[in-house]
Image: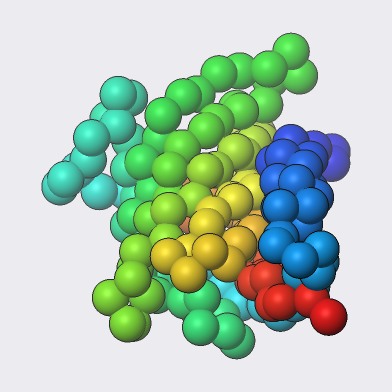
Length: 162
């Protein structure tokens, strides 16, 4: 069974990028420079500091080949079962970078309760205005006590156009 990846944020990102291009003084169109990233994520369920309306949070670590890596804290904000029996969720992922910066991502995902397989898409904006997108795939640990999987994504920034 293949899980669907939720990608609604890509449309919003494209519209924001397009509108920003037209707003550059002097007519120069900024160029988007992106860096691909790969890595792993491991999390465990936590209760300390959890402000989820469903009382479900996960702390973990994101290891990647880019500066976008560090400790994570995920807060579940909604959880529903779709017609196929998949658990569809939303939440907020906070990534704590080594330089002290916190990157906040809006998360959407799906878990297959029969197999424990999950997929998640996260979209965020850094303090410097660069955008980040992450996709996670992996498996839930027994009893939904945590998750582990692979991470792929992009870190993009706008540079002045010519």
